[in-house]
Length: 377
Image 1 (tube, rainbow, N blue to C red):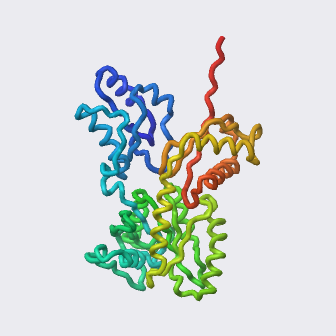
Image 2: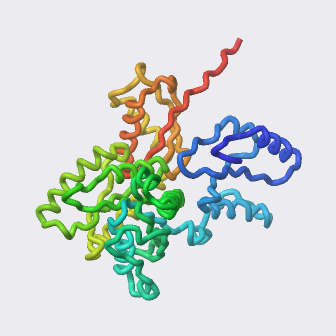
Image 3: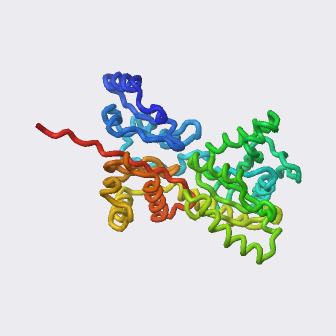
């Protein structure tokens, strides 16, 4: 079934037809990546095909789980209590896909070269450095480079510099429009986005275009790691002042992400490369975290016990469950969900992020109103 569309009359017709065939059946929910609402549990149960297996064919997500479910059926092996071995996962599924986004000429290609050059001799042996230069627009198409860092396979994706949409459409040529589209398209396939900024004493560290790019990443449900480049241009005192000022500034600008992880680097001098990769691996693990029902219920109890916003003014939170892991998507069953305000939703989301340590990770938290049971006559 298509998770973006939901169950259709044709899905129900197929389910009824399959129920009469007495054949092993597996319910697969495709297109489950990104910010997608979960299928209605009651409708899924009525299909009579069991719990759905969530996959994304376009992003190659969930393929190993699908193989592990299909193989026992094909070969007549009992599949209950089978666990998925890491060896079953393809290289592409195990790989951390790291997308580098930024304005033109902030040093994205230089960063990719620096990341590879700081790895082992084996990783550098066959690597052909990306073309770099002072002129913006040298990189036109996304370029992928694969290497290993502390046993973790990483795919770094270099993209073309993104100009303001208005400038691209009014003054840019067809190539500019195409490269901008290609860069944003690759974001849906990435696990994590590195937003590359630069130290600039004239324009400041963060521009309007950077904020627009970050908004695109957040709406796509991807975790963000901010990397501030060209720190070698600052004195030690200036760098310390920049670090102190940027922490508050970035948190205020990207308040929907909490205290956003930030690293200060110099691609030209290859400084901060290890810290960047370590932070990326740690943030990736957080963005895929799965929470037990017990932990979620404990969080709800704490919210109701010490929360400043509580019933009867606001919805009565009753039960929470996780329906997706990338990004963490939590559905809370409650009363009066339609009366909840944006401020209350922000309060819940920020408290959830603080409780589970998810700074830099977009969180999808949805309230679902409890269905009232008809009274017995």
